[in-house]
Every structure is written in C-alpha cells, then in structure tokens.
Length: 489
Image 1 (cartoon, rainbow, N blue to C red):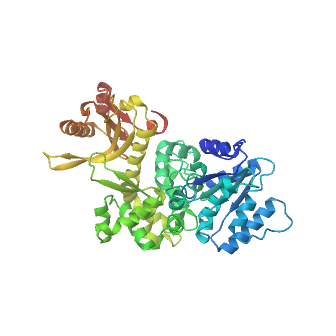
Image 2: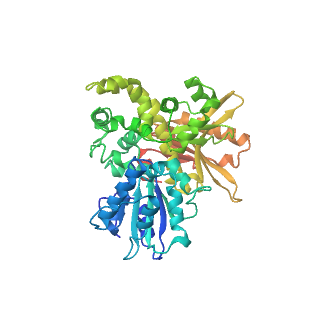
Image 3: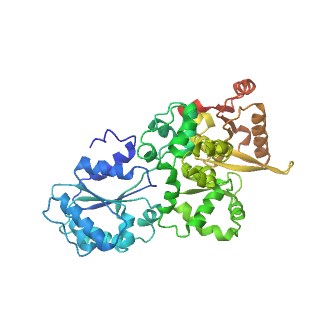
C-alpha cells in the first residue's frame, strides 16, 4: 500500500502498519497503537483503512449501550447491510467483527479504545477470549488495531497480568516529530525561527494543520506577530489547548493540584523539594501526582548525570510550559481581545528565561544524542542528560546542561563530552574555561577518562573569534551553532 501523499514523514509507522495489515496468516491478529494526543494517530490509521479497504470505528465517551448501538451502525454500513446490527453485548459485537475478512486479511480499527473500555471494563478480556486459539472457529483474518491517546491506559493494556498481554503482533507508539522534522513540517528554513517556534508548539503535527491552518512565522521578524495572532489570540484553538490537554486526561481527578504542579515545574522548580516548597506542601504528598503526570506523558523524570540521589522533573510538551510560564499569569488580560500584544511585550523576559533557554538546552541534548556524529563525541552516545558537578574548594556546584555518556573498550559506561548551551549569548573563552574547570573536577574525582572528555559549546548567538581560534587549536573543543544544530553533525 502506498502511503497517502498528504502524509508527512511517518515512514516507519506506515511500514509497520502495512506489514501488520499484510500478514498472510489465516487467524485474526491484534495490534495496539498509542501516542500522545494530536500526533496524527487517527490520520495515520484512517489512511491505512482507506488504502486497504478496511473498517474504522472511532469511539466516543458514552454508555455501553450507546457505544454498542454506534458500533453496530458503523459495522453494518461498512458491510452494506440494510439495517444496523443490534448487538446485545460486546461478546456478540467482537465475534461479528472478527468475521468480516471474507476476502483475505482486512484491517479493523477501533480508535479511542479507552472510551469503550471505560464504559465496558470487561472489553479487553472479551477481545482476549475471542482471539484465543480455542475460540477461532468461524473467525477470519481480521487485523484488529486498538488505538488510544491515554498513555497510562494503553501502556497497561499489554503489560503485567493484563488480559491482552502476549496477544499483540504490533505495539506501535506514534511519537512527536523530531525538532528537525518539525522545522520541515512547518516549512521553516531559518534555524533561529525554528527554535523559537518549536519552543512553543514542539513537534505536534496538529498544531500546524488544524490549529493554525497553515499560519507559520515567516521569519524572525514575524515571530512576535505570529505569537500574538496564532497563540495568544483567544479566537484561535492554540489559545486554550494547554488547558484542554489536562482536562482530557481521564486519570486526572484533582485538576487544581496537577495545574499547580505543572506551574511549579514551568517556573523552574525541577526537584521534588522545590516543587513542594512552591506549592506549600510536603514532598511526600507529591509522589502520586508526579507519577500520574509522568504516566500520561506530560512530564519527564530525568536522573542527574553525576549524582545518583538527585533527579529533575521537566514538562514534556512545550506548549504546556509556554502556557504556565507566559499565559496563565495573565490569563484574565489575554481573554479580552486586543490585550495580547501588551502581554507579550511584558512576557519577553519570562519567555527567554523560563521557556526558550531551557528548551534550547533540551534541543542541544537531543542533537547530542541523535544527530551528532560519533567523531563529535569521540564515541557513540548511549545516553545524554544534565547534572551538577560538585566543586568542594569553592563550596558550590556547577550545572552541566549537556552530559554525553557512551561505552569504553571494556563496555563500561564512560563520559564522552560535557557541554554548555546559551541561547542569546555570544560564547567566548570564559565559557570554555568553565567547561575546562568542570572537566578537571571530574578527572580529580576519578570519572573514567575524564581528561579526554570533549567540550561542547552550544550557542544561538554565535562565538567570539578567540573561542573559534581556541577550538581550532584544541581537538577536544566543539562549537555548535544553529546551522549545525539543524543541518550538520
């Protein structure tokens, strides 16, 4: 099956789906597709169903009886039956579904599957029983795909002692677009504009098509106007999107608490203790909300690169960070038309410090992990994180924004490179000396091969001539500007 011409990228996902659809076995098979909201899962599966002549049913949040009625009507329409099916229960409905592939392997998609399972908790067990080899009499080679955006629910569907564990021939997670792909998707060729835009909308495809209807910043000079007309405009969908992302999650019950936790992280409180202080709560009270937010994909929990007992929480969706840092404090003003420009002028400093700076640092870590060549680091990276290096003599700690780890000749983990990222600051010899000092501290404390650690200087504003000359003399120093971040290794 040819991928639809209007589908951007998703080559790996399309290949896996068509492989699953084309499996020649005579039995019914199961696949699971998940991913955060707005990533194009429905678009992908609809394209597959159309290309293969398959069946697709999109569930809604409703009662079991109404869901069965909707499902029966959709299945009858697909099969050109004169009247809707009247299924008494999901046993009957799934049994009928698994008999539709009379002319060979046929795709059957149930989108928003968590809605059905919420109204009918036994549904996963019913599907498991229907797929059991002892119950296959009368079944046809249906390729059943269950899809959902609730990461916590979909993650449990095939794990542990779940009924469907071991039944799936496909488990596909549809990710957000990589920052380089996102720039291509938004038709942005200027790297600076690409970073600015990605710091707000990330790599979520729907924000380009449905939410802005193709309105993208034309360049750095148009970026401020684009934020005002497309993001801070109360008449545009992006304006309330961050609030809806939280409201749509079925796992979140005390939404006020979750809003507060996200606001604390967006304000720069990465450690659990700092989040607790921000909220005026005990640190132990936050274990559950932090776990839930991580489970649904809104935050990430990252271990410190150099301290085993320290970790940091970061918001996974850029639009959510932007909302809590920039929009939420002035929400009342923003809801009144015509106030966006004034709010945006006041928020510039906050945007640079709370949103853009940390986001640029995250892009530098992503480049180091997935785009930099092994020659850049002196080895193949296995993980990239950030951390703090103690300086006992100065009684302080030095923040390291990029720490690249790989493996040495004995297959033991080794530090390959450390780096500093500055979005709006021209980097010079002072930045290099700071990295050299940190490298010396790591060597003194016995970090493996620390004297050979590469030093990475990332800047969105450029480098001084002195630093460029120093990098030319020292093979362990790498300078990474925006052009390299977006186009080179």
